Amino acid sequence: MNFARETGNKMVCELVLEGGDVLGAFFPWFQGGVWVYVAPKTTVAELLIDQWRLDRETVEKHIGTLFLNGIPVDDVASACLSEGDVLALSGPMPGLAGAILRKNSPLAGLRHGQRPRKIEAMSTATCASVRVHVKLFNRLIAELGPVLLKRGILLERNKAVQCLKD
Image (tube, rainbow, N blue to C red):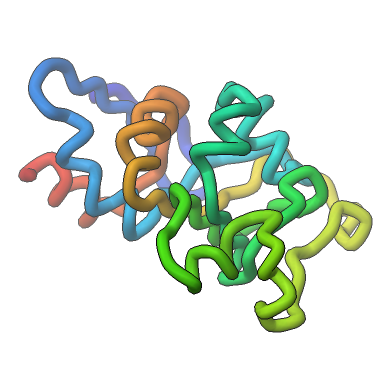
């Protein structure tokens, strides 16, 4: 374990795990959410394509449902992330509920009226990075989990200790 940097009054460390089913230990944490750093005023599309280096086909076909702070996202290019946001990503979900919540669904009109924040609605304050709580579900844990682990995630101490025990 190497201490990588100090953020505020907290020490952040780097841990390198090799061999075995490392990803399996993180499944519960991905579903519950892990913190990641993103650049300020980043859109969901910029996070997925530019920062996480996912190809557009993966974003369009494999990520069927996105929620930003509990609100379904259709336009990933205009939904903007800010400090403390919760971004939940899922593969396509089955049934009527899945069809209604699926991004760009023809049944999207059956949702409630809230929409995610747009880029122009964001404050002009600048900072080095913001933390976003990312939750992954179903097949996306195996597909995106390794991407997040390679880029770095933040776990609270008690979650990290439990993850290492698992």
